[in-house]
Length: 402
Length: 236
Image (cartoon, rainbow over all chains, first blue to last red; front, side):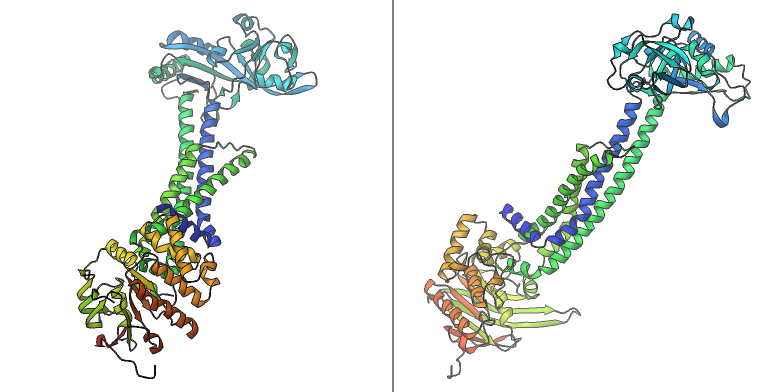
């Protein structure tokens, strides 16, 4: 019997197609918005995860103070790294690198590429693995060797899509007008320094070689890995103290370096992505609620229009419950139907959005479930009052209405 | 007609309250006895309380005071929606002046509707509804919507609907009021035949021509019954 009432409700809606469609338009828009918005939120979080994929939570970075707070004497030296690794406890490993842009050319191909001047310890800390050839060694650094290791993306840039990694090893390329031998190719990594400088698109040369190549434009950074997250804060405090002594700073002077843990940047980025998602979902929720009010409105009109029908149904033996069920079924069918169309629309919109530059939307099951549940609840909630009103109509009054 | 009393009203009062709180007495102490299989016409002046009385008999209105014995059982103070709906569904069949069919539904579905509310399965329902429509010479029109039927045909569908759950009692409010006289008389012939099935009929009408089909006429005026065996003037 419930199914039959449901069917009757469906027929009633079908007999008023345009109104039914208009009344669910809000739900359709609301649900598709929720789905897209949840997708945007998921995408943003995923993007952050990708960027900081290989970042250990125990990482501390020290760099030159830049911008407004910069002190003229501000400078960081490779020696600072040695001081840190020798004096501070609970350190797992330390490395120092400089980075900058240099023009890299092979044959006709050339371009500006992120260049890292590194010690052999860098690969370990960055979780960089070798695809072919060899990594840079301590000897390369001390000998100022003209050797280079290149990332998988840089390989494609220089040698084209079809590049054979093994063939590239042993080739010579020009980096800032210096001929250098490719000794190694890295596996695709996906990681980066603070989400900006991608390892895959970069090239790596010995620290000493890079110093003369990059000159003054080079940014130096010291990377310290602590043995445990619990020692992170102590480590940062200790490094600050020791660097201030090393740089002979007076108590009145500000730090001439910047120290931070990228792990907290990831956390902050993720929490801001969360905040954005929450905000967007709230807006979509409001849209859904407003659309629920729209459904309620339409249901009131429907009840008013079908007052006579309700009277007839009561006269031939329909209980309040039957009337309630029918009208409630109508609003729930409307909202769930709208939810379905909206979910579908969301799935269509997401790939379209992804074709635009800079958009990264991930379709998620949770978005579909969330909006579906919500639209059903909206239908039940906003349909209940009109349906209750319908069921409570006096049969004689209802029959008398035209 | 047996001697068994189906409907008995004792001192029934019915009042409405207007928006300003003023009380309007529509029925002012009505006593009625109707026997099983009897065909009773309710006549009287407009506003005399005929329709209100019919609605009370059909459990569409609660009484303000008095007793309503249906087959010997007092249902005058029943207020439970489920029970009242059950009585309307199983014991009564309504026939209205304006037919009151659901325009969205086919003739067949209209007829079957009371059984849907009774919880009868679809197949049984449709078989019964088809049978009834055939009985009323409507077998060719089962899938027609009410708008595609003439007034007389619509009233036949409405009668079939009233008979759907085999009620003891048929309540009719001016069943021929919206029909031309030819169709009206045909409908009255159908009503006359209810007697053969031992169905009790209470029919409100203004028209003497229609009322003369009844076994007796109850005449009402100003909320009271003036005559329980009213005689029509001889020219009818």
